Amino acid sequence: MARTLRVLVQVMGWACVAIGLFHVALGNAAIPGVGSAGATVDSSGRFMGASFVGYGLAWLWAARQRPIPATAVRALSAVFLLGGLGRLISLAVHGWPQWFQIALTVIELGLPPALFWLAPSEEREHDMGWPSRRVGGLRRSSAEPPEGRTEADRSTTWVQRMTG
Image 1 (cartoon, rainbow, N blue to C red):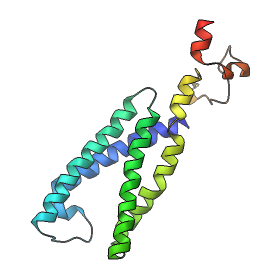
Image 2 (image 1 turned 120 degrees about the vertical axis):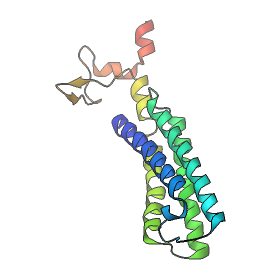
Image 3 (image 1 turned 90 degrees about the vertical axis):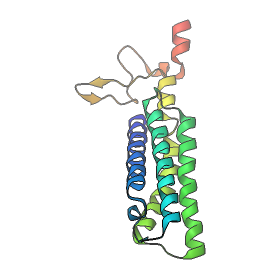
Image 4 (image 1 turned 135 degrees about the horizontal axis):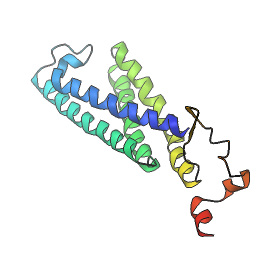
């Protein structure tokens, strides 16, 4: 689960940075179905694109931490979920958007619960003293104790083992 979390956090970061830069560069043309919505909407879209770059950089910051902070994942996921809820409000007020916006809504509502669930996985693995190990090029399962450890070791943290 920790590996899945790390991959998802990195993908979220790079995807948000790329999407944000795309919106900064193209303005209204980056939004399917918008066409020419005028200078005000274009300006707003480019500004929000830059904000999305910052959001992506926050994901990438989290991905560089060891372990990935669960609090950061939860906060960033909550922002993503809020974006999906905003799309639902728009759907209720203005009706169905272009099909690509519907697909994004599904992702924005579906991915955060998975990220909330995965958020503590790397911290938990770190606290249990079960570092990720590779054996023969494959990641060793956290369900299998490393050499020299027993199942009883699971109930103690690495600090307890080091201090006594």
